[in-house]
Image 1 (spheres, rainbow, N blue to C red):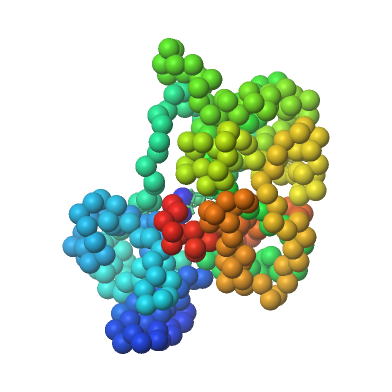
Image 2 (image 1 turned 90 degrees about the horizontal axis):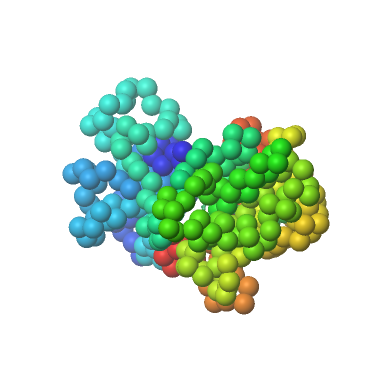
Length: 346
Ligand code: ATP
Ligand code: MN
C-alpha cells in the first residue's frame, strides 16, 4: 500500500518570482506550493501525495473546483510557473482525527486515520474471468516513485544500472511451475470465465498468452514467471500507437531460486524465447553521486518512439539485482515524467 498521507518535514522553502501570497516548499523529494509563511524550514506537516483522494470533510473543501467526487483528488499542477505536487497542511489538522499529536514522527503513516484513498482511473472493459489468488511463489509488480523515497538515491550511487522506458499499459504475469501455467493480472490469477457464453480467449491476458505461445515457451525453460506490460488498442490510451495487442517483458523471475534474473540474463532469456522486452533507454548507466531525483525526472521526459505522445517515465535498476534496505525488497524505482502528469496522464 502506498503511503499517501504521512507526517513529514518541510525541508526547504523558496520564494516564487512575482508571487506574494505563495511560496515553494520541499517535502521528501517533492516540491509544492504553500501559503506564504504557513511553514518554517524544519516544521512538521501533514503531507498528502499526488493521487490522494481526500475524504469529503470541511477542512479539505478548499481544494475542490467542482462537485465531482474526483475533485478531491490531488493531481500535478503548475502554479505561477512552478510545479506543485501534493498538499502540505499544518499538523493542527490532526486534532480532528484519532492521532496522538504529542508524539508525531517523520514518516508516520496517516493514510488510514485520515481516510485518504488512492485515486484510481476508471477502468474500461469488464471482468470476464474468476479471480483467484496470485501465485504465492511469484511477486506482484510495483515500483516506488523516487520523490517518495529520496534516500534511495544513496543506495543506487556507485552501481552500474540500466534504465527502461515505462510503458503505460497493463501489468501481466505468466508463470509456469511444475507444469502448471497461470495467467495473471496485476493482482490475481485468472480462472474460469464468469459467463460461459463469453470465451476467456476474449480477454487480453489470454490473447497475449496465445499470440506469443507463452505456455510452450515457458515450458521449454523450467520454472519461471515473466512479467510485463500489455499495450495496444483499447489498453489505457494506447500512447505507443500500436496497431495490435503486444507484450513487453520487464521481469523474469526464477521460481526455484526465488530471484529475478539480472539484466543480462533477463535480456538473454527473452531473446532465447523470442519475446520483446520493454524499450531500454540506457543499458549501462553509471549511477554516480551527480545523479539526483531531479536529473532522473529530466531523463523521464521524452516521447514514445515514433509518436508525439509523452512517455510516462522511466524505471531505474542496478544491472545486478540488489537488495534495498529502505524498500525491504529489490532496489528499483520509477521516475514519472512531469510533462506526462501535467498533460493529464493518469
Ligand atoms: P503508484 O504506486 O504510483 O500509485 P501503480 O502502483 O499503479 O502507481 P505504476 O505507476 O503503474 O504503479 O508503476 C508500476 C507498474 O509499472 C508496474 O506494475 C508495471 O506494470 C509497470 N511498468 C511499465 N513499464 C515498466 C518497466 N519498464 N519496468 C517495470 N515496470 C513497468
Ligand atoms: Mn504502486
